[in-house]
Length: 359
Ligand SMILES: *[C@@H]1O[C@H](CO)[C@@H](O)[C@H](O)[C@H]1NC(C)=O
Ligand SMILES: *[C@@H]1O[C@H](CO)[C@@H](O)[C@H](O)[C@H]1NC(C)=O
Image (cartoon, rainbow, N blue to C red):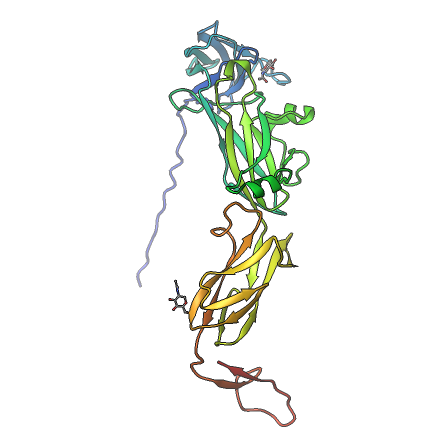
């Protein structure tokens, strides 16, 4: 008999390493005439630190965080940009650990905003779904992202995408597909700390929520509303609002001369509702020689296969986005007669069955 002895030695690694780290070793803050941008600089580990500006006293200021229970022992501080001079400059903040005298350094770079843009995870919103967050990021002339835009007001507006044809853009002039939602209104979100002040005063910061209220194409336009930044062009983002639609059946086989009834269903808060095809929603068949389609009723004409696409009149370019179904016109290959429910011809006297014909 063999005995296998497995000895596992647990090395109890002692973490003697005493290095501390800032949440950001380098920060980039924007310069304004009348706004003092703040950033909370924090040592990630617990401990007591002395913070000081070692260079750039005319550029940045350090402020204590209010309501800090332990006034003597802090590991974070607010860095405030105080300069109004529109040139790139750098200050240095040091934090000294009181017990070990270890020193941490953070470079604070101040610069003007050169461009800004909207970060999104999607530019397609679905009706009846949670509002989507849109966040702005600003960059300096070298394309570096500013660390924070907290406390900076932006002007957000909704617009409509102009269609190629004049008539339809006129028609859509007063037609809103999007709506701003506040974070406190949304049951899916919490108010981000950075925009708390704006929420209560009805203004908008660098993070907002948008909700689709009608299917169609809309646009959001953002401006930086400050005299010193009037040269920066506004940013426009095209957004499409889609209804969550399905075509039923999604894949169908038919014989020449058959008719197939398509239904369009909309998913609304987890429930399917039938949509009436009309001027707004209509089905189109890609290959018209294969089958014809009128108000959801398809007539199979010729052997072949074709896609059926659902179009939405309100969308600028709906063909690529709408849901699709496939219709295949084929010859019957074989005919089979089956006895339900077991597809088995053995049965018992007096038992009732349904008989199906499969093609
Ligand atoms: C930064 O903090 C100071 C002092 O707490 C405050 O007066 C100022 O409004 C803050 N700046 C922004 C942009 O919120
Ligand atoms: C359209 O369908 C017809 C008949 O089914 C077929 O002969 C033709 O090749 C199809 N055309 C295209 C572009 O798929």
